[in-house]
Length: 305
Ligand code: ATP
Ligand code: ZN
Image 1 (cartoon, rainbow, N blue to C red):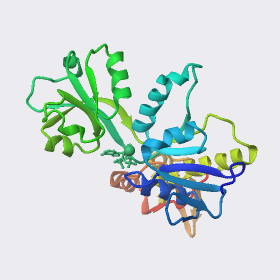
Image 2: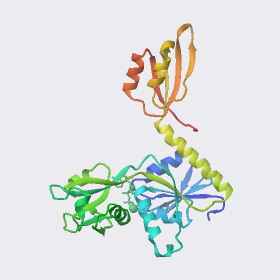
Image 3: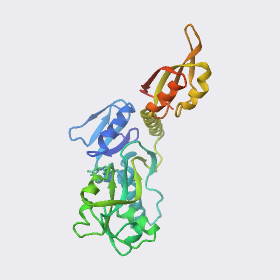
Image 4: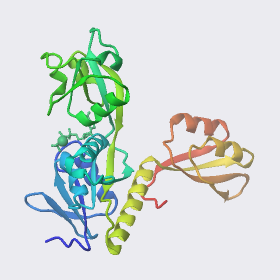
């Protein structure tokens, strides 16, 4: 039995593209868990946080209905469900938002976009007036078409949308793309982007008991730290004192560097700095040109912003 008063429940995808990355994120936040035999729930051992493993499509409703306090799903799923919930007849009371989007995470990137038969006459979304679009995201696509005053018929598919034009079931599609190879394989050409998506952290719109709210705040802070660390590097180098200003300008996203004297050298110092962006070879080459030497770039293990 889960102690709802004190333990946070977070829903993540059971098996799919977001599963490993979401579990990895929670582990990096320090969560140790055991997975039960049916694998529906993983109980947190060292933090009052339990993980519910479900289909990604179910996650927004679990958070809306307060079965879970938090959830991680792609923005594509989150936005589709949000529009659907707001449109439901039992939302007469004009329920405000069914959940709160608290973070956009740094994985699961893809885009929801229109695609048209290659070599066909349709080149843009404007040409879809009076035609049919197949998609698994009827609410997002319907909303987009309305906002662009395009009168097209939206045909809901539950999967394999990309074969719809070839089967004569639609004139165009609107589907998720990351590399575009699936489109190419189905002789489709990518068109307008409707939504840039990535994994998204949701929370219940309801207030939670103080103890849980504390843990939620801690988890959010750790998630921010994990995301920042993934981009951050610790750089150490020796540099001539006169070049310090120039060197500072060369370092992307850095805070004030630590400058330390070097034994028996008067005109050179050691410079240590955390860069919150990726450091490329070009940057190192520029640092060297500015007079730096012994340049070391190291990953950062943990960071508390
Ligand atoms: P489930 O069984 O949980 O319903 P699914 O088949 O709906 O799984 P996946 O294919 O595992 O879902 O994708 C999960 C999420 O990963 C998508 O909703 C999307 O946000 C993201 N994603 C990232 N890249 C892609 C991609 N190339 N194609 C589809 N989804 C992608
Ligand atoms: Zn799904």
